[in-house]
Length: 372
Image (tube, rainbow, N blue to C red; front, side, top):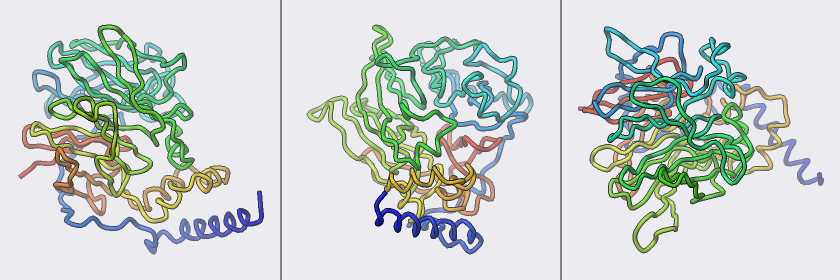
């Protein structure tokens, strides 16, 4: 390493160390968002007994649910206040030791269901399991069946989210990284990894086609209402990428929106608008780290804990942010829980019957916000 890099490294690490130790002074909290409404503290929470991490939420063709995947590998179904949550499905048959609500070291055995989508024609539930690939389970639940576990001769490392084109029998899905698994998600972001992919799976031919490569933490997926394009969240950069499926730009991609944080899942509402859940907003310091892969890789070599690195990325503030985008990518509405009084670290916002159903990969409850 040359002298310039040594000096820069020492200075950068000294600054970061000071910031980490002075968090009470809020010296690197994210900026506020113009026009944001601090309304999410009013959300109701539905506790998950003995479970954590309801990352994605989906309603079946009968409007029942929501269904959600949790950190121990189960998919649960909400049956109302009287009956609560019940087991619906699992993605792994090796369940003997899957007894702890949160055990990252067991995720590759127990499975970790992330994105969920129902086929409204058949009632089948499609599942993006971070470790076990793309799966499907019938309307009665039970053990899911694998559909895609490898692409181009290599196992999927971090299957994340999907959307369905029921007319064409196509599933669009993401593999976040070819280098990192889900339990290493902080390392993937900090290191500047850009091995994420957007792919499509043809249910009739069982063929997988890679549409986009080189994505920085490929995450949420959503088709436009007219199926002319598909969106994919690039979490590390805060960008929503649009890949054109039809029209004069078919096969090309562009930036649909740049967001002030880390986008997770994207869900379209009945009007064709898109709700994007932000894991958190992003501070200037976090932008420096995520835009400088050398600095990020240097940080990973130092004795920082997972919690400290996560704290660095989210600006020390476990807030909640949901952003609604138009069909053209314009920001229509920003809802927040600025002080995390009720919600934090959002992973998905699903609009259903005048309510926002809100998931988070890190908390033991689902949020429900009544739209006015």
